[in-house]
Image 1 (tube, rainbow, N blue to C red):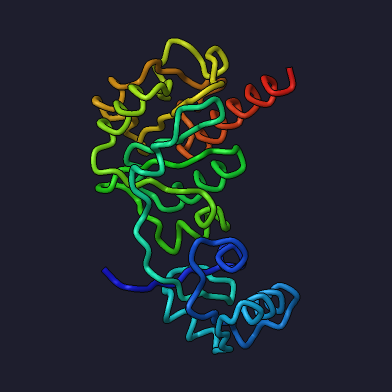
Image 2: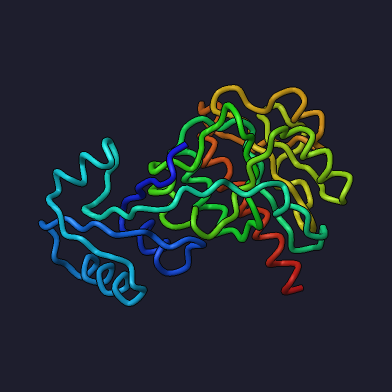
Length: 248
């Protein structure tokens, strides 16, 4: 496994500088940019004693092929994803986890992370194998949220969910054939929202661990939503209920 990697895009790089758990080794800026955002990145990096180099845009393309880097890259230390230890805090009323059962597309993972941060999720749970990792693409789509939301990589998702259930969490899975809708169930308190993979949904063992399986009501001819869109619907319904509880 490489000891370092690049992330790109202004949101991701600024997040790594401002409040990321690990600071960049250096920041690379395209010589074709001299706007407010690039100046902000340069000033912030220099204030943190992070080296800044100006390079040709073609150099950025070579270092991060296929990544829409917007003219900025940051060289980051390779850090392992969090383990199950981030899930061990007591199952109090404010804890909300998002579990992704084998999401393969890094764009979807990044979008889920961005929504998770906005909805106040405590951690995102992903299986270690056969799932998208925190690649440069996922981090860019996450727009900085990958630096702020813990991502717990677990060896066996169904076993982890069973432990959380025993610890007092309510496991709510999403599937198109759920009897109840996401709007019919109580999503306050310690909850794990479980989303399945693109096209396949939750695996059998994952589904069996859920206390309840719900669906998003759909009108028209659309059969299902993209996993990141579905996660947004469910997470913000949970947030709506939680805000109502705190205000009531």
